[in-house]
Length: 96
Image (cartoon, rainbow, N blue to C red; front, side):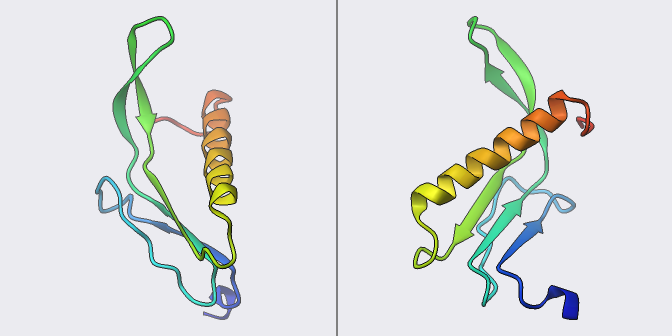
């Protein structure tokens, strides 16, 4: 367990057990935790007025507001979204 001590951030995944979302609890002394659930296919409107089916991964971020500003947390979530979308579109991650 020594490799798990002293962290400032962690990731928790419930993808193997399903669910659509959850609120991860920060493990002290960490300042944030990212929660992931199972990827699912969901309809998403396109710019042309049609609908396409896309892989959606619900993500939850819990953070200590004494340390992390809410705007910074929102920018981090957007960064994670962009990074995941670009890896999938580049073929680095298999779609379900």
